[in-house]
Length: 164
Image 1 (cartoon, rainbow, N blue to C red):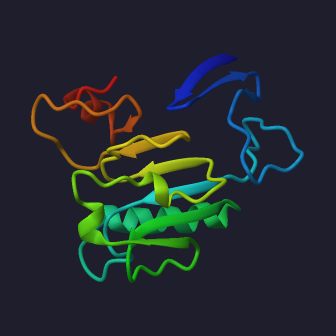
Image 2: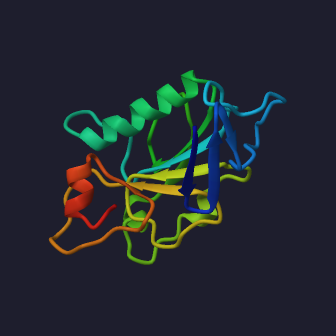
């Protein structure tokens, strides 16, 4: 099997059971990356709310569950989220909620040094200098198109929002 892929800022190829061309994670051990083993990474999650939520909050819960699961899998997790957030499995980088929601907000200065990838659950207005993905959970207005590295909920969701 040989397949190619691309994440914003990083290309990779799968050859047999080997993954070739991935960015070298900052916490990399000496084992080579394969389909069965990817070295631990420093993953940064970004959401502009206080976490966890006490009541309703589907996306908020997903961010917390993902932080916990990634940490349990051995990855280092940093969480850029509202002041007062408490997710013990992640290193919190607090952000003022009003500032984070402003149209000129730049998340880049908050990304910890040595991070391998950013997964944002909200718009990224200025792309960082590391691989990043935007997860879209809701629905945009008809005709809206997300960046090429948007992660949609389904093929139909992608089709309705200009994704591939």
